Amino acid sequence: MIFNLYIYNRRGKLLYYKEWNRPLNTLADDIEEERKLMFGMIFSMKDLCGRLSPSPNSEGLHTIRTDSFALHHFESASGIMFIFNTDPGVENLYQTLKHIYSHIYIECVCRNPLYEHTPDSPIKCPLFVQKLDEYVMAQSFAR
Image (cartoon, rainbow, N blue to C red; front, side):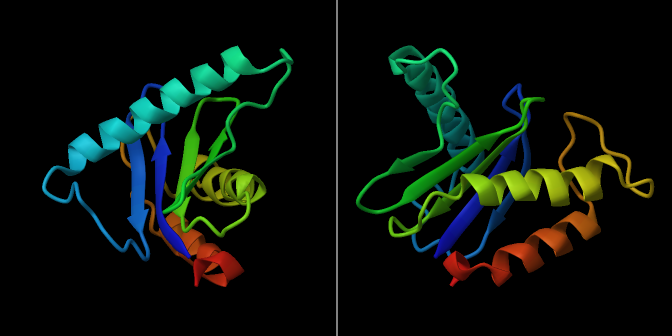
């Protein structure tokens, strides 16, 4: 089951957030704090993975798994980060996040002549929201 999705730019600005089936939100009173904590944790974990990797060409952070959730991460060459939180039984969603970036984000936000997006502004494109929701709900892990 999928809990939520975060999309950040390279400077840590949250561009998009969506919840599907989040069972518990302990930071509901301070949403901005949660968003900062998530970016900070990803930033630190990416750095740690880079330092611990035996290969300089490592692809970096893909999945963090605990007993209560799994965090899935994809970062584009331009620094846009996509992060899914799911239940721990969901397999690695790196390719799914890559698909969302290349086929939904790029097509609906970056190449859409009817939508003007600036790098630090939240994504408010109805076509992006619709295509993302359709794609995610069609996946077996979403239920």
